[in-house]
Each structure stands twice: as structure tokens, then as C-alpha cells.
Image (cartoon, rainbow, N blue to C red):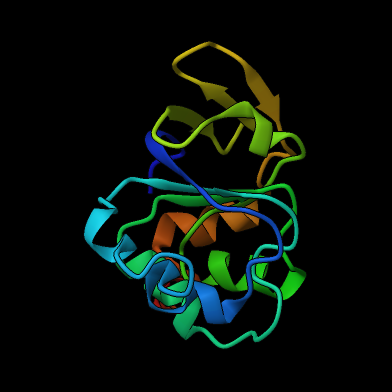
Length: 151
């Protein structure tokens, strides 16, 4: 997994629940799965992923090639589920005002920085722990555990 990457932003609002996320944001935009490209990023407001903790909704984001989810806040269980599936989940206050839909942002997981490529504005977030980075590097918790047990 890349620890520094750039991607195109798709913006969504506040309080997006698992039902709307399921099927690659199908509850909010039934055509989204046709528009999104591998490496794209989701930026959202507060309470992203509230509701059910079932893995089918976050898995649909990963399987569509979303590179990361960035939001003002992410429900705790959803945040961990995304990371366990190998998809960076980043809580970053102010992210919803940093970018507009279609702009590119650069994300650095180790330093905890996000930069709008178009205008240079930036935000910081708590850097990922070494453990979370190791899970992401392996593509999720299951591949991480398999590689740990085979040593």
C-alpha cells in the first residue's frame, strides 16, 4: 500500500449510514459505481459510517478501488472496519471545507497531512500508528495475520 498518494475527491455530506454506503454509495448516487475510478477518494462530513457494522458496505468501497475515506468524523466501529479491510480511514476536522468535488488531494499517512493539490491549502490529522500502517501495508487484517503467523 502506498503511504503517500494523490487522488480525485468525491464529496458527500454528514451522517452517511451503512445503508447509503452499501453498493458503493448507491443510496446517495445510484450511478456512482459507474463514475468512480480506482485511486479516487471519498471526503465526507460528520458521522460517516453510522449504523450497521456489517462489512458489505465498506467492502464495496474497497472493491471499487477507493484509495481512502476522509471525513470530519467516522463512527468508531466503521473506522476500524475500513482499516481492517485495508482501506485507510482518516478523521480530519476541516476536511470538508478543504476541497471541492473533483479536486485532487495528496494524503500522507505517515506524517498525517492532506494537501489540496489545486490551491496548496492543507490540513493535519493524527498520523497512523505503526500497527495500523502494518495492517494497511498487508492489505488488511486477515493478510496481516496470515503473514505474521507464517513467520
